[in-house]
Structures are given as C-alpha cells and as structure tokens.
Length: 313
Ligand SMILES: [Zn+2]
Image (cartoon, rainbow, N blue to C red; front, side):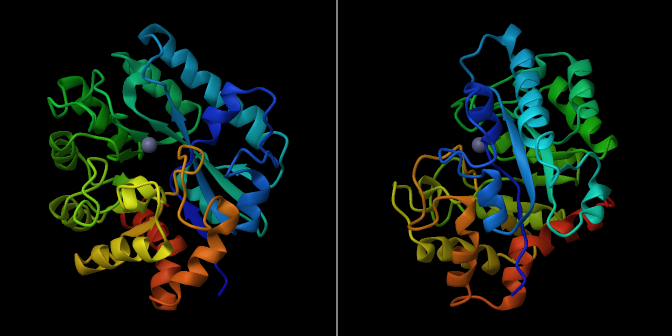
C-alpha cells in the first residue's frame, strides 16, 4: 500500500529551541527528525509551538518567536525537501519526496490579551491554533484546571478571528466547557492529539458526546500514540490502540480520525512504535484489524477531506 502520513502533532520545535546543538536532520533524541519522517512516509507534519507554563507571561510571546525561528532556521532552511505550508492549498503542490511542514500554536497563552500578537503569528505562518494547554490562560481553562471554565470574551473573539482567517481551532487540552463554547463559534475545529475517554478515562481524552459532536461538525481528531492516553499506564500495544480506533468507528467517526502522534512531547511509547520511522510498522499491524480503505483514511485522506469540507484547500 502506498502509505503517506499526515501527523497533526509533534513537539520537535521545543527540543530544537531548548538545545542549540540539536539538529533536525538525524538527532537520535528527536523522534520526528527528518530521517524518521522520511522513513515513516510522512507527507505533512504539524510542528507545535509549545510554551512552558512556568515561563513568565511577559516572556511567552518571545518564547513563541524563538520556536518559530527554530522552525525556519533548523527545519525549513537547511532542508530543501521540507516545504513550509503557508496556506492550506500549498499541500496540493507538494512534489514527490517533499514533506509539508505546518506551524501550529499549542495554547493562546503566548498572546496574553494582545490580539495583534495572534495576527503576527498568522503572518509568520501559523495555520492551527490550540486554545489552551492544560492550564488556564486569558482565553479559557485547560483540562488541568478544576474550575473548568469555558471561553472568556477574549477567547470567543480569538475563535471568531481564527474562523474568519481560515485558521483551524484545536480543542485538544481544552476544558470540556471550552470545547462546547468553541463548537458554537466555528466549524473549522480539530482535536489534534486526543483519544477516546470511554476506553481510557484520562482528562485529555474526548467523551463520546464530544466525539459525536466533532463528527457532526465535519471535524477531525488526531489519534495520539502516548500510552498514558491509550491505557492510562506507561505501557501500550498496537492492540490497545485498536480498541480506541474501533470505538471511534462505533461512534461514526471512521472518516474523521487520523494520526496526531505527539512524538517529542511523550516519554513512553506503544511497543515498537517509538519514532516516526515506525509508522509503516504500525500500519502494517493495523492491516490485521482494518480494511485498506480505513487505513488510507486514517493516514492521510480523512484530513484532506476535512480541509475540502471546510473549503480550506
Ligand atoms: Zn499536547
């Protein structure tokens, strides 16, 4: 099968920004490095800009810019095969052997209450905006906040702004109340790296009601390969992941799911699937459970259909 993979989440930029000696090309401590993306037939890779919650608020935007700079200087510039996807249509123009790279903000913490900063991030090429990480920010609460508040007035304005600018809003990490608030304001919604709560009751996973609502909106969910979100422990097998996939299918989401690996943001792995280079092994194993059509949808086609459905490409 001619597999190509679209992966809606990795944390490579955090590693590159933290350690100037790390190189994207083949650093063995980077799971989604260039060599591994090539070996795993990755076609499009999302690169998250993740802001450590412990950084002082006044330095957060600066830290976002440092990661954007790492994206340009270390991912794009030295590697002609890496193509920065600046607008969704650019995915269609990728040539054989090229890998599309998408900038994604993981949490609006970086902008504080300054809408201009979000506009600047759009200008720099950010195409997907996560509302929160696990903590609260001025736009909403993350899943880690007991308070569980939804969108603030500022948060609502930022979601509408995303929608108007053809930017995807990402609800992974967002409080449940925030999730429902977002769905009232935009159809251009994804959960870039989340699994099914029914199978693994972790706060980062999605309830059946949330999954069904994303399907109804024509949205998309990236299945995350982190054992903690698969079994609730540091150990998981491909078979454990299959239980999530089957549950998504049962809820009518078979055409709305893909891969949001979370490589470089995770510390344990599904047995044998410890970097992007192992994607083909993963899909080989899934062939024992699912049809070829389902696997093509999961690896690439469901995300491309999502973009088409929302007139993004
Ligand atoms: Zn995350």
